[in-house]
Length: 283
Image 1 (cartoon, rainbow, N blue to C red):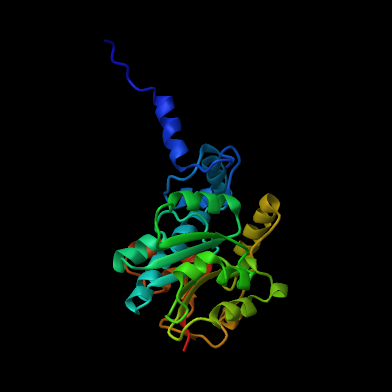
Image 2: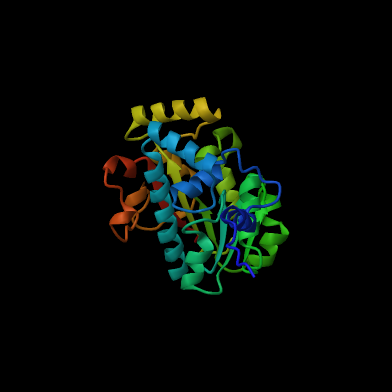
């Protein structure tokens, strides 16, 4: 009887089918999967990687900024858990890839619950497949500007207890909300139903220090995507927080918020100054 070695291509295809949602286009680059690639994840394809590498050649800051943002997310979640928060609402979450909220939170508090929210169907489809069978997490396909729809969704109502403090996460989100959509009002609307002691963590692009660099970057982004993030000043980002009180060290460069080690801060100080980061408490 002959022993046949498995067909490598067939095995590879079987492995891909395990984590690729039905109907998802793997031949077209996707922002969420590019983000996954920059973080060192494996939920990406050749087109995502080649596009990401091309972007890095013209925007050499991008991978480092993405990783600084992710490192801050981890520190913020761990801080929230240390403050007794065991439930999280992650707005504009993308794919729950490397350094995701639920793994970090549940490592510290196994009972922690997380709802991921994103308007991009591809990110949601990947997230649903990755989290299938985990009854302490959920993925919601929704535009974060539909506050009533998000907070009233079955996913949020199942996992979030509004009588207890909540960790609200807005990573690289609010700079995509233009002034005419009232980002401060959006933050206020999400905070109003939350219990005292709830915490908000955010990161936001700024051009306060490197205006010329930011202008060059956004011009290149406009050529590729047709939309650009809205850089806000330190005072403008503070204004988004309303009456929420910042915890120490306040609103600072992303790598400067309670760094736990050298990987939390970029080697080139310029990259630490492209994103503001902060955590604020509801009293």
